[in-house]
Image (cartoon, rainbow, N blue to C red; front, side):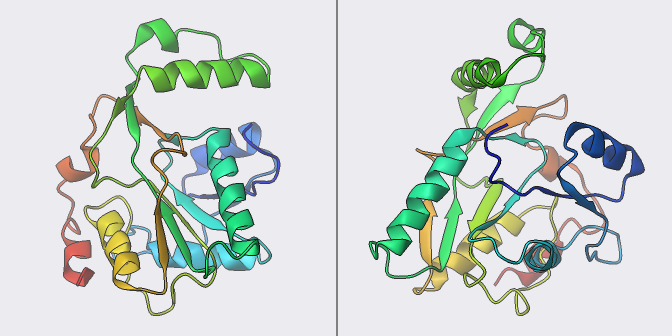
Length: 220
């Protein structure tokens, strides 16, 4: 609903969610073609490399966690960045954008009991209401990343895995260490809402999976 210019790619091997996505987002590209480690946890760089093939002419590429809600502020921020690059206000197209999120408790019955049926303006109003009832989260939790094809050498990128601690911080660290990459904090212009369920805001840290420390080994 935020923009027809977005081309959405959903990475999942779950048949239930594949059917749900195709019903709700018929124009989205659903694929199970992504690399994983030996414990079947998805590798971030494989998703980006695959997305470059699926949509080879996009100016920006983004990874967004599935429990994050965004509105038109996301697209407007990208438009402003693209304009700044084209007008030479930024001296590089190697862009790395991320930002803080706000947490919204799904158990908030006053909001969540509202009907989901409605037009675009209804959803704009509902998103605003949710955002205003959400709380700003920690500075070290990133749930979306926007890059161009030139930002990183993804083939040389370590095999960071999603859904485990530190992959977000490791990616931020790599961007900040490279002086040729323009790192941008989108916290004030991108309204990102995390849907907090019964497992809380630290679900990724609570799950002690066998590959829990995987990203720490590669984050150097």
